[in-house]
Length: 234
Length: 238
Ligand SMILES: Nc1ncnc2c1ncn2[C@@H]1O[C@H](COP(=O)(O)OP(=O)(O)OP(=O)(O)O)[C@@H](O)[C@H]1O
Ligand SMILES: [Mg+2]
Image 1 (tube, rainbow over the protein chains, first blue to last red):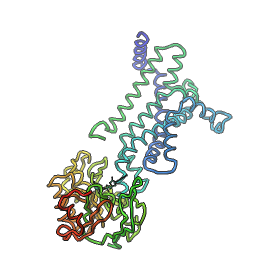
Image 2 (image 1 turned 180 degrees about the horizontal axis):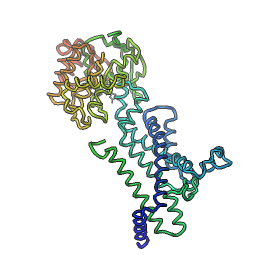
Image 3 (image 1 turned 60 degrees about the horizontal axis):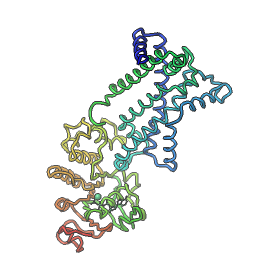
Image 4 (image 1 turned 180 degrees about the vertical axis):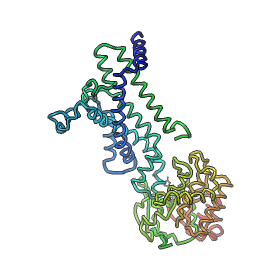
């Protein structure tokens, strides 16, 4: 209970003093996760729609793999990206290890299957509803995908925000590929891990509260900007 | 009209579902003009026949051939489902959808749509989400959306089953106007009065087979088969 209280006090303190380090790592957290989620959405949403509409031989297997990838352990993703980007790895020359770019890359790998899988599930139901009409009107495959993305945008937004929640709260992969370097790759989650390691629970908890607040504010902001909670059933 | 997509030929078609023949084998030609009413008891295969002609259902055997390529023919047909399918968009956006799919610019499509909104009395719903419409209003929207492309052939699967008298009347009037405009109609219905009013010919289906094919005027007075006769009298057919 004392720890909790101390955490709240630490959080309030960090926020009202606009602690320089806090602002810096919060912005970096946001930057990495927002960029990663945008990239993941650009790949994952159309892919989810494609899976809903297309009928090809290995579709079921593709969906099963996708669902399995949703539960990909971040540490493993981090490890693989680390090996790929390390000096001796195939992409070593790019010199990306321990940079925000590497962290974005790892998060894209983690989040894309989540967004693709969730959007596939939502759009599959919409496709079921639209199937006869869209076949009857003789739409092309890309028109069908486009229609689903447009009319299913509400569910897609939720899928994307789920991906964002996963990205901003993720620590295992970005710790490995980012290295938690002060003023370079330190983000909220890795800072929390560090403070816990040092035994400073109050500061760790304070950072945690800031993290959760950011996640909530982003969700609310996106929803109110897109007006999805208002006006009718979709 | 450049080249007509009609007549439509069904050559020895049959549809099987889960190992059971649910339609055919049947050979039949849909002529170039008029209103064909498809009648028959529940499960006779009316929906299957309509979907087969429209291309929503592939024949297990046999062929369905239009006078033009399938793609050209498809662009000139509309299908109205028993339960209207409305998209999660505004009424106006639902209405212009088939035009937009055909590459017609938005402004032209909206202009055309305003005529149809008036025709089906949905002007005041233009910018409302189509989901707020009642069942009857949704069906009117579906009719407008089907007619907006000025189809050569219009398929209707029991379009007025869930509608009250006034809505049924309104939709029937739209169908009548389409018939006078030269649109070929193929409609399944259980409504005897409606069938009688619209039919230029009747296809009577029984257990998946075209049991009788008769002129509209004759069918209701003097059906050729005893089964059709008892069906018209309201007897239960097995
Ligand atoms: N996927 C399917 N698998 C098995 N049987 C099917 C399938 N689809 C339809 N049937 C059967 O095919 C028969 C014809 O169905 P259809 O929907 O064409 O009848 P209908 O004449 O339109 O009936 P209704 O008047 O009730 O609308 C029915 O007996 C139905 O049970
Ligand atoms: Mg039916």
